[in-house]
Length: 527
Image (cartoon, rainbow, N blue to C red; front, side, top):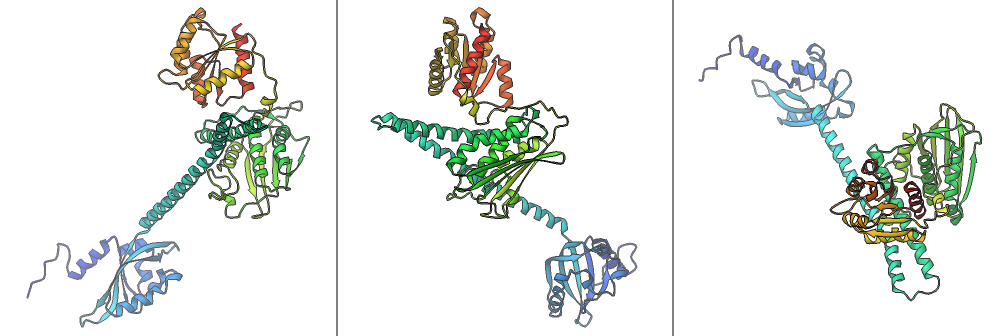
């Protein structure tokens, strides 16, 4: 017969030693009889469940089992009576304060000296933190998958929205180049090309706006703004589109509404986006009502339509960027899903809020913009913001450039030819260069009154060109007024252009009237 192992120092019996081991465990170790009555409860059980041994011994284990899981106990007892062991059973248990805990249980039958099963021993481990981490990870994975789906949908939509007008442009260019046109085809082709180019320009402007907003680089020209004036200007901009669909536009604007503080162009952009959306999603013969009123210390502009409405499950996401109620390839309405996201960001930059309401699909929608009143009213103030789509610019008479000499620098042949042709039609005498070095050689031979240069060019860009030019004495062209004509239009690009020596930066695609007016103004500086 093997002699029992000696006890460690300080223990007077095996029971004392075993009790110390149980009390030092990080896991709850609990015993119960076959009726589910607790017979022992260690220190870890007190820490995990909040009950002391005195509170639990003699009490049913059901005390720590949630109501919806009490059915687990009879099943466990039945398995124990058959002598079965339950390994790593993940479940929920209750803390004394009512909190639910994630618990992993291992349950073993306890036998007496005669080999009869008289109870059970439970080892319970609190896995709440582990489960919480798993839930956070699962949520993050779900969000990542959702973002990836949204990204894929957005890229698909972007490709469609860019390629569709591009197809019209390419197709009509090929038709016009082929010659043998019937009467009216030239005008029709030019109209389609212009419309398609405007569509692409709008898409690019939306993408750039969202990029600036997300990077915190939107700059507001804050001033006192008469909201009624801005709203009426936006209404006039969209009125032709509404009339083309037979949509009735009705507006009620409080004539004595106090001004707000903000950027008139950005606020008009907000109204233009909301009105354009309302027209897009309102069927022929529908109605759009616009209301501007004072509500306490705010002005509220509401745009209500009788359009397709918004489903209740999509309404909370209507201002999310890249989100569209219908992103399928069979969708009826185009767009990138950026317009309302831009609206929300711009309104919040003005200290206001925007919200949407809709009774449901087919029942129309109402979008409301709320902006705080300006701290000090100026009764005589009237704002006249420029139309965000350039409508006013297109209606201004073209400036005359008779007798003005201009050097146009651009590595893109089509862009260079287009700018030169536009200036020549206004009366300017134009020379061109396809690179910075060619421009410098041209300037060595003759000096124009104005320089118009691209920025992004190979080998030597427009910044380097201007820096070299500004290092020259005046008689060698060092003082020639210059305009940067570029697709780089961030705030830092404008700063870099000014530091290089440009007087102004014009974003591509430039409006012909704006280009000619800019050259005329720079030519005056040269005199």
